[in-house]
Length: 89
Image (cartoon, rainbow, N blue to C red):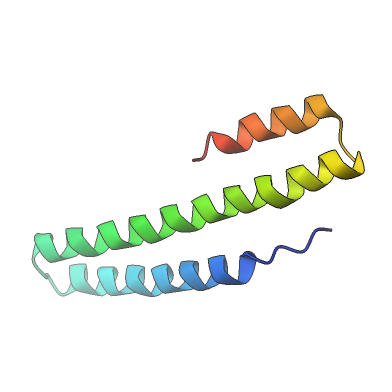
């Protein structure tokens, strides 16, 4: 199993987004203005997108690269996996 040095930072980002999302729920329940809610939703969406991008890049930079170097996966399988994961960017 490959050690993912980026995962602790991704987890931190997602936990922060989770906290913001809980705040948004409270804002909605408290009938805060839609503009304020939309701004916070945008911030959460951006944080999640950033975490996803970091995860995909980490996978390409480490997992796929390692699979090629160590020969643990065929070139065809690695290319197929590369194409599959880059759809999430």
